[in-house]
Length: 622
Ligand SMILES: NC(=O)c1ccc[n+]([C@@H]2O[C@H](COP(=O)([O-])OP(=O)(O)OC[C@H]3O[C@@H](n4cnc5c(N)ncnc54)[C@H](O)[C@@H]3O)[C@@H](O)[C@H]2O)c1
Ligand SMILES: O=C(O)C[C@H](O)C(=O)O
Ligand SMILES: [Mg+2]
Image 1 (cartoon, rainbow, N blue to C red):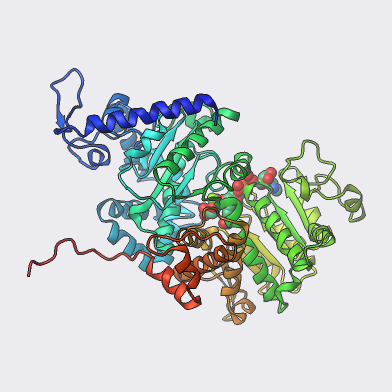
Image 2 (image 1 turned 180 degrees about the vertical axis):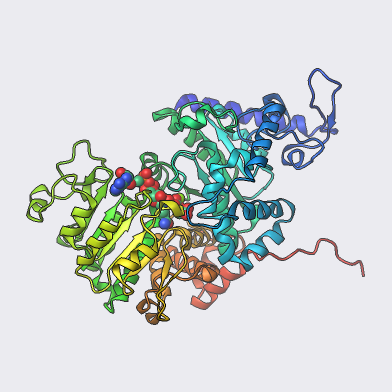
């Protein structure tokens, strides 16, 4: 950390102490209206925002935000009441329009609003409804509807949820974290809004994705909802539409770059780990150019991971191993699979690195094993096939650039199109993480017919629904009933009429991140190691029975997400024990943890999962 930053942090620390002393004075009252007769408010922070009499929402001035401990609890753009009403009216009128994401539910946004209102009123009931109906409502609180929510966030914004740190808050974050009411926070999901699903830069409105991910942490992993914190770091936006939109809730400036950007993220990390030293921070939907850099920067010092890079990789590997088993072959045949990947961003490169590592391990981890694994992948991005002939190649993609000579022998050259690559390579698997809806066109799917596999697999993993590389209907109708299909967002199974169904698997990182977070939390491991991530992925791969994979079912249904999450958490803890990383959690110290057998470990996980039951608040005297 730079000296200037250190000075800023220490001045902010002294301000906290100063403020805490001031605020502990007897009345805790403040004047809230300037120029009018003052109103005395005896509340602070979230209590004010939740009080309809005092609440002004985004219209709280900066002075009020500072004095009333509101800083960070609202999106950064201060609006006047006229603007607020305009925002509200625009949203009200939009109800008449059909807001839908491709083929998904036309009432999805209306359902989201109803659930969100319940969340505001009664948290226990909200999570009970969500857990009991997870299959029906995960697509509302999570992908794909959450994408639509972020796109319409300025209208949907009612009660703020989570914290906002902005470029304007530099030097203040260490005091702002104390505005959050919870003494303990276990899980933070943070985004900078720069790549929300496949929808691009949504700026501050991307907070919805952090809220949606944490809903799954509560529903699937049983993390206590009082101890989760969604965070938006607003460093500006490069979305020109938002920059011009008077209703935009975030900073209307271009994104910070270089060290200015890093300084903000560093300050945020310092602040949250100072207040909550054991918190786990999940990085979500950061554009690739920062996703890898931030992961490298923090992963050895903080308990953090990047869901798009590491969670996606684990889910993809589990699915790819399922696709091998679905052919009636053992998992150890994985290194023989020819895989074409469309998309070389944070998700695509994350999958490639993990798949190469898994193959190399299966081949004995020698140097030749590594080379041999490397030669199983062909990567196509927006500019076509990536070869060593590519100018200004992205350093993350460099290891997967194919040798020019070798490609010539296959009849391919730098920049070859996806259809050319599929025709020449005849891959076993075509995997999309490109964010380009319909990329696996009829022509590409027809080309997959030449696949040398007995059961070719299509992974159309981009989100939300309209960004999926193809639909299961298209894929099954061209490649036949035998094919294996997975998509990032949920689709219905395809009926063939003969009683046979084409199974549509949901290949989404939601099957891993809750278990990775819960396992890390309960082990007390100070970092999230590669081994812990691998254990999570292997546990997911092994979860499906032989019978299921032979039917083309390579991922569990979402109705089993709580059970699979529990098992993944136990696998993560076990690996942390093996790597000597455990430090214990609450009353379970590291030594006790080491003594647990498999069954006791599972029990330990289960006992630490929150269930949505009303607590007894008042006991009878007698
Ligand atoms: N299913 C899941 O669990 C999961 C997890 C993470 C990300 N995703 C999805 O993956 C997508 C990509 O995420 P990202 O972070 O890697 O994004 P990104 O923007 O960093 O990367 C997109 C990549 O696709 C490439 N691309 C663009 N047009 C292409 C084309 N016509 N042909 C081939 N490649 C093309 C780009 O060059 C880039 O390499 C998003 O839609 C996201 O929602 C899904
Ligand atoms: O959010 C999801 O549904 C998966 C993934 O994290 C994504 O960015 O698409
Ligand atoms: Mg994501």
